[in-house]
Image 1: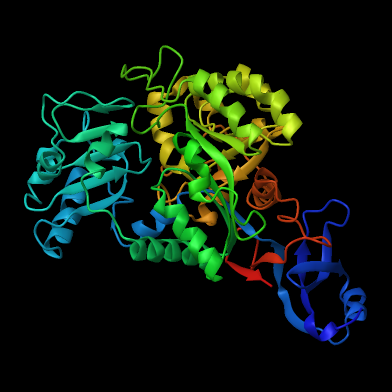
Image 2: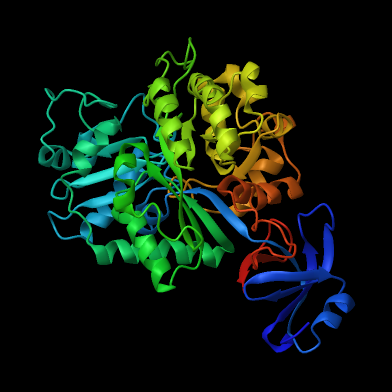
Length: 501
């Protein structure tokens, strides 16, 4: 092999995720691609003058992928009020009060990460609870699932929300005032100061750098952000400052403006538009997941449908004709059932276009629907199982056996792709491994332990699965021609570091 001085040999215990040669001792890399793999002696003979990276004490795998994140929102969240782990209203109030002391009066306080089920309330939180500790700062706090927000009176007043304000389409204003469900949160966010280009770029860089430092090499960023968010990622990619390969989703409402957003730009680079996002329902914690009757066990109803199935089917066909992937958020059993119906109508066109239809979350399923996931990408977030276990036992006991049904979905022939939904949850792969391996929630209780996966199956769903979902045949596998993007481990599921050559 010529010009071996420009080549690199990685010596490590290597899991290739390629069944034709699953384990090797060394990998030869050049020009950003895997050139060869094999024993140390075989690879050394191919390039005797190559640079050698000796990681024989570590495990080399295809690079970690984060299959569901709101990357720029996550970057912003790193500097906002973090309420993850808050176990009471009092604890939230204390954190808001502390932030208010550090913030000039009149300046917005933003944060999130709390779980409604952990606040110790009989219902939804009121504005008055935040007014007690922050009457002079407008406050908007998002629940962990981002489908519920909690505002104080000053924020509501600035948004023009009163007891007489009608519910907006796709949202609900809870009374007494303070909680906003689904699209109702936009009544407040639209009156907040708009970040400038520099702030979006800083948030995009912060989020991407954080992921790379955790050991990730790629990410699928979802459409729940302003148009400036993907533009910031595109700018970083054009500057050569993006440490990740990005597969981005466009909100279906913006499909008509796709070209303005650069849909056709740089399809082979580090930023790629790949999916178009729909929302079939809300979320479990906010009681907006769309369920079959009788619904939630506490009598709070059957949730909230959002994008109608007919819209998903009709606009999904338009998406496929553009060569993009329909990507639909579905949490409840009814939402998943209706999306599967819509996708059944789209399967012939998807096959013709070479696109794999995709469902995000697929959390709580009707057992009869499990076989219908065959051939679909199912992007799931095992880390959410840890916080949701208690809620599932309380609110959805009849669906406990088919909640987070990883093993059943895999057996049905679905492509599993694992992520975190950050900033809903931190992009912490260790928690993903723990949840998918042990099926234990935050209280140590098991949830359908028969749905557990092995370490190698979890690794596949965090590497090769997302690559296949994105249409990247050259990623998530170590073989000649693959992208030279790896993760090094002290043990699988342990400490990780990215290695991109």
